[in-house]
Length: 375
Image (cartoon, rainbow, N blue to C red; front, side, top):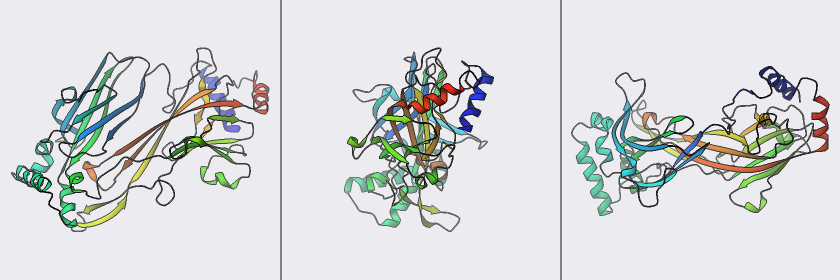
């Protein structure tokens, strides 16, 4: 509990109601974007794309304006992305669409706007585009080496949401557009799928390394989310003294859980040799105290204290036993490190609810430290 005590000292310095804001802590007085998920994770021209925007909202935005840029590339200075060929997404929405969940058809002409392809294939882009459309229409199969070439005939688009509520936000999501889906290429990106989220309770104080969780007797695990077997979910988390706690998710490691997607890419350094690789994944954890009320000891303190970019992260339990209902939010993104500017990113979002229950021993520990200046 030394880290918990140290954390409480920080609280004391900042004052009881001015706990410093943390990126992972969703302050209920602020809007917080969490994820934009596109299905499919990459599109072909003419595909219908489902877009879902996940966020924590303090209030309904007075403005929620979506735009689509059909061409994205480096600026002349090479320091930022240049947005070109803007379209109002509301003009493309299909029936039943809302600002948080909508469908639209990717314009058939999207690839023709790619400045990168026009540089690589001067005056040839319309002809190549027309040829690929003809092969799709005729159902002509193509050999594997041709699939790799088709994979390279692509462009990067951008979806951008502008919202105005308690704060003004611009939230963006890049989407690769190419014909690979229509030719059943194995390199088509798909969104990652997290099969489970849960919490480890370890009978050891101040344990910081999640890789040794299973070395200690008395370690327990409970699911907060289980895609394959919802009946295994138990959402009451018991907080006891002398324990360490970790929130964990499906690691996506090949052969262990869901498995990271494998793909092939062209290595220009090695004279165009096609090389296999596996996607990297990044875990982004957030949490909020559903019960928070003004005057309550800051929801502190379910505080993540290790690298939030991994599938297991330690959290410090609350120092306020009136904090019961909580929510965890997990955004997982995959990356293809060898794909450069045309990187195709898949996204998965999961929200889990739970309730903290405190043992008498934990309550006694808290009470024994009250009045000491720690809380």
